[in-house]
Image: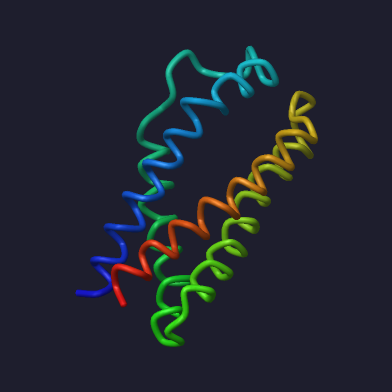
Length: 129
């Protein structure tokens, strides 16, 4: 039951913060940086697949170890490392193959992934402990 609570709170935290970030800041940055590469409307199903799988990964790799060590710091650190790795994989691959993918996008994506995943993992841990 603790893992279910952790997953629900992690997902809610992640989605609220991520959607706010995308809506308030990132959408304009992507529009300026990537322009014609973007779809008029995003495809929903790939986002759903990502969010479901990634939330499961956060719970498994960050929340679960924090629950066994009783530490918010463990959730934050493991989440931040997972986020930097996952978002880094995405953004560095894009930077390697797309001319329009700028160093600004690389740095901001890695920092965002670390922050968002760390905060979400900590929230999931705090509710599940």
